[in-house]
Image 1: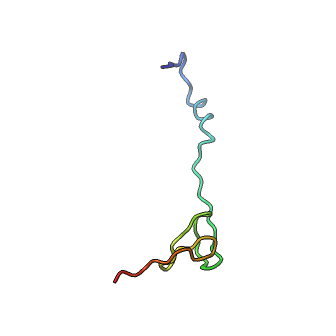
Image 2: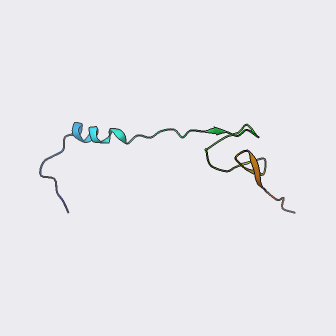
Image 3: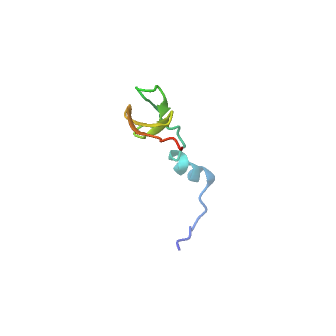
Length: 63
């Protein structure tokens, strides 16, 4: 394994890590239901699975 020859200072280490940032995911609004959801993802709303504003699947009631 490689071992550092000199100590990396905190400032130098932190400068390298400035690009690692957490960001909030963007949300899309469904044109059919008005619900917010992650873009390019299907989502459940009132026992129906929506994708691109259309119903893809319905949840069947257990009897």
